Length: 268
Image (cartoon, rainbow, N blue to C red; front, top):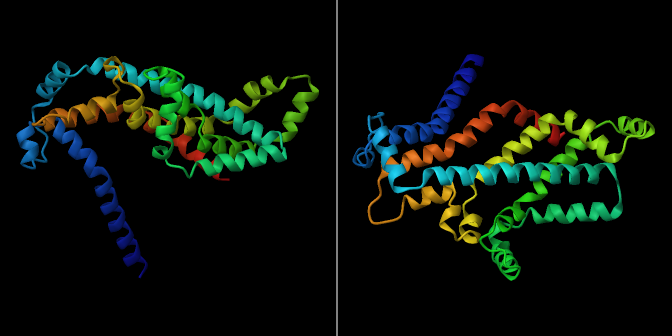
């Protein structure tokens, strides 16, 4: 009976792994095939990778899109980690009824989809004459309720006795945060960096609305442009999707251990 259950479990896991990995394989295979081969359903890798890449760089400004996406994702990630970690640390270390009420309001804000606040945000930035600026792009992503809650949960495991001892030694609150809290919470920062970078890199809707300059094109916007027109080169499209996917995949693979530990620590 035990062997039967084990066999069934392995079969289910193999099927789940296949269903999860097949889209990635199809994307890689499609990037190496011609458009007509993809339409016909060819699943075996082909020899048109260089042709697809040559067509992509000739018709689209790939270098500019990659630069803009990396710039936006890196800067937004760094600022978000700093702002949200300070907020989460403050919410946990300095208890106050007003702060608890504010935290509850922030958690309620997580229930609102972005499309519900998209138009008010656009009107707000338009009234400030910030449309088509990097500030308008980054400002809504700098502080998120999820990251604040994540750092607050992680701060609960930070020993308060160490904070009191550091205060007695004369350390300021800023030094305590930067020299003691940040090094201890490396896994939480790794998880938060993974989530923030992926969200900033894959963000399509808000940059499309707020950035109306062709020189501010990002990789998701470039991939969307590949589908425009009467005919679509699916080989070039698959290659564009593959290139757009690689940075987030590399970041996740490099930080997957910190991501798992950080999420587990935040849940605890």
